Amino acid sequence: MTRAAAQLHVAQTALGAQMRQLEEELGTPLLQRHSRGVAATAAGQALHLRALQILELVAQTTREMRAFRPVQTETITLGMSPSLVHLAASDLLIRAHSVMPNVTLRLVEETSQVLVDALKRGELDMLLAHEIPDSAGLTRTPWLVEELLFVTAPTPDTVAQQTAWDIVETIPLANALKTDLALLLRLDGMRKIIATAAEPLKVKPRVAFEVQSAQALKLLIADHAVASILPYGLALPELRSASLVAHRVVDPPLTRTLYMVRTEKRLSASNELALAELLCSIRLRLFDLLGPLASAIDLGNGTVG
Image (cartoon, rainbow, N blue to C red; front, side, top):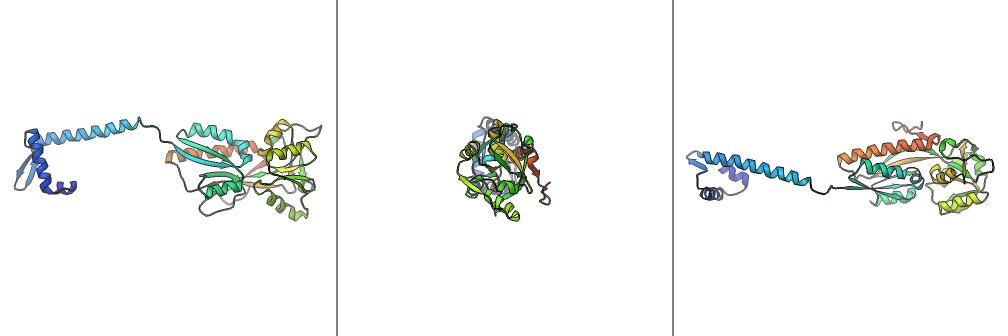
């Protein structure tokens, strides 16, 4: 009785009084008291067995009732740069709905710098974007290196381009930089990429127009004798319709790196595994869509292959 009272965190006298009250209610002794303590009577042993059965039945009922609860969903907010939205957003959302039914995936489209700022403020859980600097508190994983394209209006003898594999014409970077260019004001470090590549060539880029809207920029290219440097994904609808054509830039190529960046937030174990599989499939899908424009990164030593 002393040990039982200690385990129940009640006084021994109070426990003894409750046991006597229970015996009176049932009309039979449950404990046999003697000089060395107490022992259960036959009725006490039967009551103990039935109590265990009752407790197990309560536990089983609780488990069964949990099956009727609404499924608890988790939410992850993913940021993507505009060119990636053109390439892979629909595949990502459909596949996420299939492989992560208990996860609500929210998609935010913005430029890289805006996405990084939102990630640091806690408004995003992860992002897929280009030219992301390393930052404390964020996990940055390089996915691939992508070539940028020299995009112009079509000529009468232009062959329609529908996929990255169809882009076979090339232009030396020096020649591309001597063309009147129209550039987006906010495009994932484009100015820095062009300036860094142009410096060894001793060529100053001829930026004739700066445009805020990607759609306005593409209309400007299609309607007038200007060109631009754009990622494949951003020009994809117009390349498919042949309202724009693209050349690969060579000597040297213009490239940018795509990163997957996450905060410390993690999903439950099963959903985290499904998310990893989802991201792997989307990465492979991007390689398939970008074809020769994409190069893999050896995560072991950071080299491009």
